[in-house]
Picture 1 (cartoon, one colour):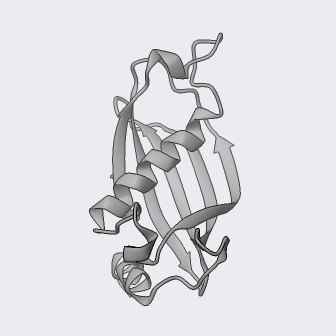
Picture 2 (picture 1 turned 90 degrees about the horizontal axis):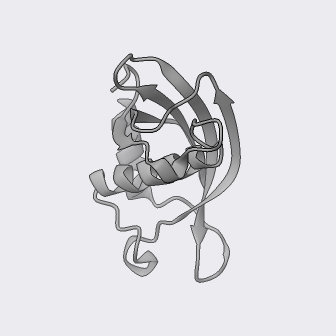
Length: 140
């Protein structure tokens, strides 16, 4: 895991994720973030399946992606995640994808997520217990 990050998840690039240039198709990078988020929330013990139980779900508001180098079929990549900012109804997460074999950073992203109530179809405050988990990671 990269220094300053709170979580990392490894993924091996599959053949179906590459394009005609034999590199990872751009759209797959957001999928890697989604998979990493799922594993991150799982590691925190957050139930992302039942909103009624957790009172926590998220919706992507903005995403800023920066491609620094290509990932190739069969590369093992490590997606690092950190919680950068915590607001009342939203938070900012930052990501860095690293090729395991070389340590080279291939991709970074900064995403803003809103806490989302899927029943009412609108934003909601981030539950205090989730904020506490995020703050604990930040050392606050």
